[in-house]
Structure formats: C-alpha cells, structure tokens
Length: 333
Image (cartoon, rainbow, N blue to C red):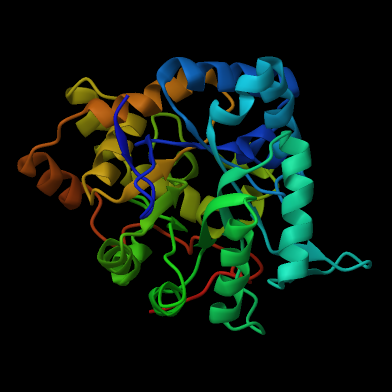
C-alpha cells in the first residue's frame, strides 16, 4: 500500500480509502456479514481509511463498522483512521434540514462515537453547510471538538473554494470532500487548486462515477432498484444509455492495456494531484481488489492525453444531481 498525508497534521493514510455508504442499502441490499467481509479485505489490502456518516442508514453504517471493530478489543482504536460526518438532520415531520450548531454537531458526534465504539475519530466533517451559520463560527465549533479530544482533525463536505478559504483563516481544514472523477470534473473549477494551496486533502467520493466508469455499468433496471440512482439524471433514460455508449471507448482503452476500467479510473484520479484521496465504495471484496489495483498503475503523458480525448470535460449526459439532490452542496461556478 502507498500512503499520503491527511491534511496538515502530518498523519498519513492509505492513498485510497473506503466509502462506507456501501454498508447500507443505498446502492442495493447489504447485510452486516457482507460488510464485515469487505472490511476484512480492506485490512488485507492495507486500506486504513474508512469514511462513514451518521446519515448513512441513520447510523447503520457506523454500527456495522463498530461491530467489526469490537472483535479486535483494545486494538480497535488504531485499526482504521475513521472519518464520519454530521450536520444533516430531520424535523419531527420528516423534513430534512441542516444544523451546524456546536450543540447539534457534538451531540451527533457523541452518538457516532458510541455506535463506532471509539473515543475519538480521526476526521469529522460537516456533512452539509448550514447557510444560516457563518462558516467561521462553524470552524470555531469544530476546533473546540479537537480541544476536547473527540476528533483529531475536521473537514467539510461539498463546500465552495471561497468557503474553504474563509474557514482556513480560522483553523486549518484537513479535508474537503467532493464528488470527483472522469465523469464529474467540477472540483477543477477552483476547489482542486484551493485545496492544494492550503494543504487540504481533497477526498474524492464516487471516483468511478457510480459504476459508469467500470466494466459493468448499471443499466436502467438495476438503477431503478437503487433509491439514489433511480431519480438521478445520469441514470435515467436516455442519459444512461448515452453515458454507457460514450464510455465504451474508455473501457476498451483499459482492456487493451490489461486494466479494468475501475482501476484506470482510480489511476487517472490519483494523477490529478498529490493531495487527492479517492474513497470508492463497494459491497464486493473482489471489486475492492480491483479498485486498489489502480494505485499501482503508472500512466504516461500519452495515456493521459488519450483518456482526455476519449472522455473530454463535459462528456457526461445529465446533471450529477437531481433538483432535490442539489439541496445542500454549494455551487461555485
């Protein structure tokens, strides 16, 4: 395994992490035993960075990680470097909203720690920025959680470069999480550059485009069974069929070189900067092996130019989010 710094602390993590949204039914049914098999494979492969959230299955992802860690007794605190999140909540009538107050974040963090069976997490994100709370105030709240010893570092998910810059003037921000892949190049419009200049790790979720950049992209029948994808513009007809067609050349390019498309997707992403940390998710241990192979591929300048020709910026049909899914992430360009 290869390692990289996480944020400004000097602490190192594996250059590929694991997105534990896969431990709930977000992309299809999964049980605890299946989740534990994936975690066993992650340890075998040297992946030491897990990314979860209190919002994934209302804490179920954290609980499944916690039940796995419990098997290791006193060693569990050091087994993985774990990131979790808070800030998305619901009113009694089920309405979703965002709360970045210190009281809410600390309460949710305490419940996350209990589910995980840990005293501290390595990274704690504000999952969605609350537009009614200035980011400087939120940053001060997160710094207090570091002083209390409940978190080592903190970050933000789906914020704009300007918000990152403002927050960094209060306290170093270890990581910003954003969707980034050959299918979603949005971070290149300022976030990628701002993270690099501030020493902030860009944690890239959905690095294989939710299957579009793999050898087995979802068809519409499969997407219909997945709560998130069934209403996602890129996975609705005719966009989905067009996206699969456009990416056929990329799959062929990978196959001719003896790679899987997923491995090549990870390799491309890592080539975009030393501060990029992809966190793919999967319910299949063999798929995890395939994803990890991407960190060992050495792409030439010619390879990168050819990939750019096959999948130029803006090739994807359909927005990455629906109107409802866009509620929360900051748009910045």
